[in-house]
Amino acid sequence: MQRIGLIPTGGKFPRHFAITPDGAAVIVSNQDSGNIRVFSRDLETGLLTMTDQSFAISAPNYIRFY
Image (cartoon, rainbow, N blue to C red; front, side):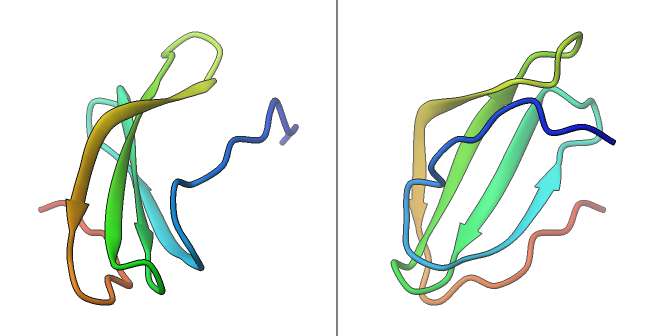
């Protein structure tokens, strides 16, 4: 595995992240700032781009897809 980049999570204390089932996005829970941020993910390179999507949730700590 090789690091391909670094990107801020858009919040304080990133607790968990998950890649969507289609691989096109990454969802990050920022526990201390009480938000969940959505990043688009390039399917070929894996590079992330922060989107405008952010959701306020009190102390999120886990992301799971069913």
